[in-house]
Amino acid sequence: MRLHLFEWEDQPWFPDFLRSAMTKYLAAAYGITPFPKRWANCVSKLMSRDVTTEIVDLGSGSGGPIAHVVKELGEGGFKASVTLTDLYPNVSRIECIAAGSSIRYWPEPVNATRVPDALSGIRTMFASFHHFRPQAAREILRDAFEQRRPICIFEGTSRTPAAIASALLIPFLVLLLTPLVRPLSWMQILLTYLVPILPLLIFWDGLVSQLRTYSVQELEEFTRDLQLPAYRWEAGLIGIPRMPPGVPYLIGWPE
Image (cartoon, rainbow, N blue to C red; front, side):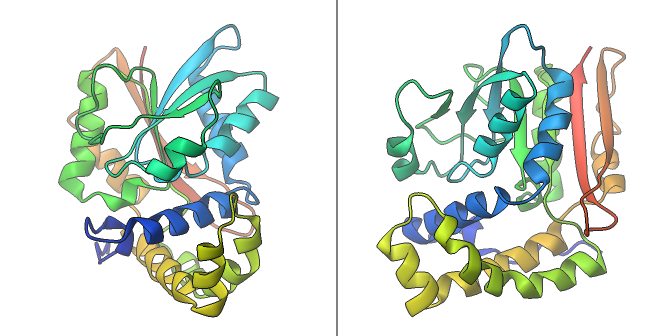
């Protein structure tokens, strides 16, 4: 049974500096996992090597794993221009993205259920779809369907006993992997090692993320009334070593 429990990062009143520190850690942690390569392989099915493909990343936080995904796409011969979006845009992250980069941050708040027409291209959500309750999740998919936009939903969590139990390792991983965070600020170090707030916050949100993750069957149910001959849906599990049975994904695209 899916449990939509409290997550710190979801709260509008949650301090921006803590939200930023948590999302920067997650972005760094994804960089040493097989997820970016697996996700890039799926996204590339909707791309062509002949042109640069526009990608609109929804719920980006501090950027999440998208930079790693773009790197994997490039190594596979695919070029992407990415626009990061979020309901709570990360101002510090906007300032850190260099001019001329293939990744930019949309400075205005973007509601994933009503994406502005100015943002066109393949919509992606990496490890963030579980933040939305069922009604909002359906609206995200419906908006892409009605606008005839491709959409790729990927999770890095799974609502299985083994995955839930693995959350107990999160505080130790935060201590181990924080030196990989870039840029690494004194605040990140302070709140990880001297006053270990971040390991506890990330542990709780990580555990709840497992409990919130939609199953493949639930993802398929969301698309049941979003059917047209010219629009296709594909749902399944992405296999990850030492993480049986895998993590769920959903892709929709116009033919």
